[in-house]
Structure formats: C-alpha cells, structure tokens
Image 1: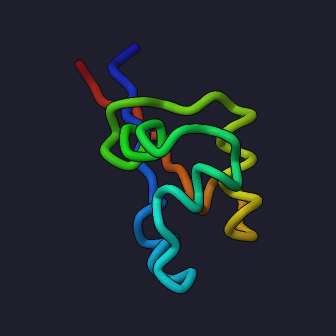
Image 2 (image 1 turned 90 degrees about the vertical axis):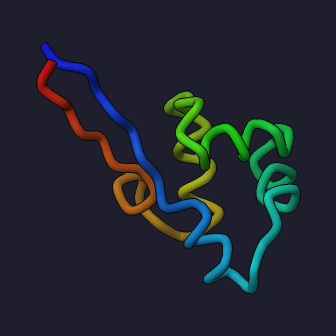
Image 3 (image 1 turned 120 degrees about the horizontal axis):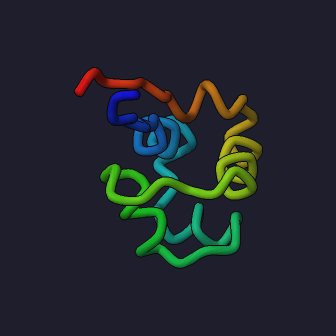
Length: 73
C-alpha cells in the first residue's frame, strides 16, 4: 500500500463564502485558527468528525471539501 495524500478545497470555499477568514471558520467548527491553517496547507489531516463539521459550514459533502488519493511508493 502506497502513501496517501489528503488535499482540500477549504481556501477556495472560504473565499467563495464572502471571503470567510480562517478564524471565522475555526470559530464555527470549534478549533483554533492554527488548526485551520495546518489543514489548508496539508500539514494536518482532520478527524472524521472535524471534516464533517467543516463540510457542513460550507453546505458541502466531505468529498467536495476533501480529496483522498493513494500514491504508489
């Protein structure tokens, strides 16, 4: 099994939402702004619960916010 990569569209979704700030999103989902920064940069993969909370803020599915791709080693 190869390495997996999780990417996201959070930055694009925030800007399509009247340029929602990272802090505003963090407040809505109950995490710190630094957590949102790390997720957007791909340095941190959110828990399943947090992924659903983020998707719900945008009225989107988890698959519309996050993408999972397996890479061959």
